[in-house]
Every structure is written in structure tokens, then in C-alpha cells.
Length: 410
Image (cartoon, rainbow, N blue to C red; front, top):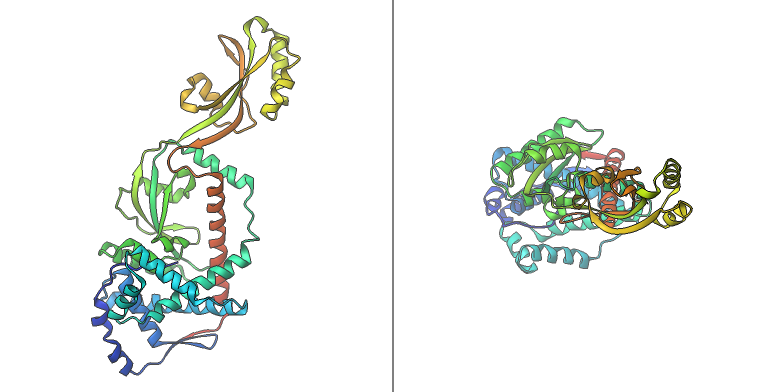
């Protein structure tokens, strides 16, 4: 959720005038969403909120963009609240109070200071409360509709772990993002203009975190766009290419990714310190027992093995053959002639029968894990994959609501 307020900009008062002057103006309807009116007062109040919470400098050019963003957000939020009402979901005011308390905590102030700062800049607290109400309601109904339907398979998790393992020794990136959605039925140029307008504000000094909270369409907007430390195996290929070219503190140009455009900020970078750990069992046939028949028997036995529990039973009738549990060993601690055939193996797989000074040996992988800073657990990977699917389904649902609703912009 786009909740965190930055240091408030005093420009809102001079740009839009005081609340008293505003009340004397003649206002009208800016848009109708399924016959529900969004007034010009609503739009102006949201513009103030965007300015004071993002630090954007209000010029004639940026005000046009801010107005478009304010109206777009209000339309989406109206659709979200209307859809929540059809499911009889009402947000408890205490939940909104909790969200405001969270904003205050993130900014090291108390909730009363948030209310006072907004009022000082001509923003009614109800403007913020409405935004939070829509976000909370939407989270509730999206979770209720899709959480039980999303299935993350072991294959998906293993595939992600494979990519993580492949990039284990490569640099790690601490990233933040601003995602601008390109609706399927919309003109891509509109999203491109939004992205360029956001880039302009960032290059002029607007805080990335605050801009992300107000303009990003990704769930990471709740954290100011930050998505934390990532291995290259967890990132989209197009994002990896961009991240490799950035220095800490730098921004990318808008990058085309599935579903939209992404602006990437590299917060920090560190060398890969992860290691691939193998839980190994060594299967040996001593030199004194090596002959054509015993080697063939060993190879047949290896072909029948499915787990570490199978090993002794499969080699029991091979004279002189024995197994030794080596336990957890990092790949870089193994001799090159052993590490090379082991590299890339998964649990339940084994090397070929290798010729060594001790005779013939094979190595069976009982388990494999990746350790080190920033390495996600299986649960974390599953959560990441689930959130990606939930985000995609959420955007698709909102897109369908826009398409099927009657929206009249005046």
C-alpha cells in the first residue's frame, strides 16, 4: 500500500490556495464511475496529497500529470470500493487508524502529527483515509478470491532454486522499483508518458520512495518500491541486464517488462558470498576389487538408486563395495575433479563412476542447499511466487472492472 508520507512540501498551499478559498470556488463533477460522482474537489484534494507526500515540484507541466494521476487513482479506488461492497466487505475504521499509525511510525512521528501536517498543507485527513480504505478493501477481496486458488508447485520452487544456484557466486543487488502498468486495452504510449513524467520528477530530486508510494502499480509500493536483496536467479533477464550496468544510487530508464514499464533503482550491491552445499555419500569400489564385472555391477546399481536410503541395499552383493556418508560439503571445498561432475546435480542424482587412485568411486547427492546472505528459503521462494501471481491476478481483475464499468470523464 502507498502509505508512507515523506517530509511534506509546503508548495501545496501556494499552488492550490487555502482550504477557505477552495470552499468558495464553484466545483463540479470530474468523473462518474457507475453513476458515482468524483468531484473536482476530490481531484484537487488528491493532487494536494500527491504533492505533499511525494515531494514533487508543482509546475504547470507537472500539475497536468498530477491531475491525471489523481483522477486515475480515484477512479480505480472507486471501482475497488464498489467491488468490495458487492462482496459485503466493509473496512473497519480501526484498520484505517492502524494504517495511519503505521505511516506515523515509518516517519518517526505520531498519528496526530500526520493529521496536523496534512491540514497545514491544505489536505483533509479524509483524503488519506479514503485512499487507505480502498487499498485495504481491495487487499481483502483479492486475497479472499484468489489465495485458495493459487498453487505453487514443487517444480516451480525447484526451478527458482536452480536459477538461484546458478547465480550463487554472482553479485547480489538491493533494488527498488516503480512499476507502471500497461493495461491490455490501453495505448502503450500513455504508460510511457507516465513513466517519463515519473523519471523527470526523480531526476529533479523527488525522493524515490515517496514517488513509488504514490505512482507505482506494484505491491512493493507499500515499501517505497524496495524489493530487497536479490540474486540474479530471482530477477527477470531484462532486469538483470539493467542492474549490472547501474552503480549504487543510480536509476535506470523505464524498462519494458511483462505487463508494463519498470524504473529500477540500485540501492546497494555486494559480491556473491553464497555457497552451494551438498550432502554427499561416497560409493567406493577399492582398486583390489576392480574388474570388468564389478564395474558393470556398480554402474547397474547406481542406475537403480533413488535416494541415500537405497545405496547400501543396491551395492550389498558387489564384493568389496562400500559407502561413506560425507555429510554437508560446500562445492568449493571439493577437489576440482570431483566438484565438476557434482556441480548442477540435484538431490537423488549421482556422478558417473569415476576412476580415482583409490579405485572406482561415485558420489550420490542426498540433499543440496544454498547458503549465505540473501539466499531465500523454500518458504520465501514460495511466498515470492505466490505474491507475483496474486499481483498479476489483482491487476487483471481491476482491468476487467475498468472495461466492464461505465466511466464518464468530464
